[in-house]
Length: 349
Image 1 (spheres, rainbow, N blue to C red):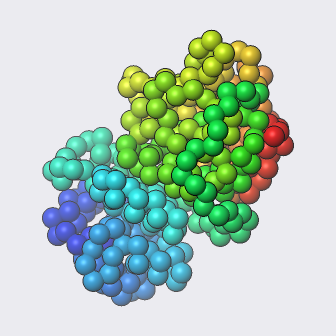
Image 2: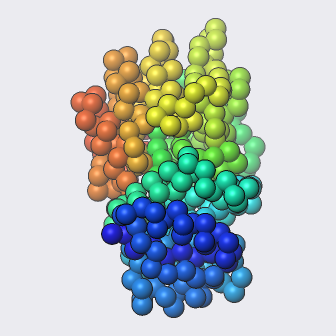
Image 3: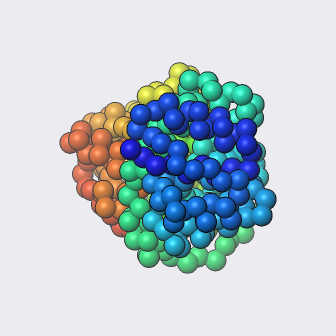
């Protein structure tokens, strides 16, 4: 039984969330708090296995509360975030501070009872409760400190020899900060990422990574030509593919059917990269729940790509890497702290 503490200043939202959770036999709601100060008093008394934490609250907000929880307890936290640009920025900050995952609050609060959202909430909470919290301190021990660079992009250069396709989900925003900022600006390749996130959140993630990295990071747009030393993140709710157009490699976006319930899909990106000719390829599967990317890795391996998977010890959730490893199409299983150096070693500068 997973013991859940709900922290939210909205009485109505607490009730809606509780009604969803108590209908699942694996979950029990042991308490409710309307702000962070109340929650911190309850934690040692109720001993929850997981905490759902609203970002915007009076008296003590979610970020401040999260810092206390991360410092004093080993309890996974799932943030509740508004679907706004500001909400996306604050959510990314929460993930950096130690939150395992987040649940976007619907614009229409009554839609929380819709079946697809119910499934998402239950899945994220159950996954977070079983996640590998011990991976977090390890992940940030090796962080490379980089001075924020200018917001202007580095020069466009379509001459490169490698395309690197990366897929990740739960734990990904934190993990990507251990990889992308370490890559050198003159890397001999272009990087593409699928991170499972809603619209606006992927733009905030790209901006955040761009401020930390030597490579130029942006949200992928229809018609973008791939450049050397540039990194493109699939926008939320869009599949991202790469096609060859003359001498250029170009991004195509679409809203075709979800794959394994997901859009963007790692499988979709990797299949498109696998189909490209005249370019070397690297496929990387990182932390995340589910099996997205396992089919794509098979196709990439068949196209003579070099493939990597993050190891269990450093993964917040080992689902996606485990599924990829089971295909027997992974060349190397590697710790998060070594992924950037391995990519650079293969791709060169």
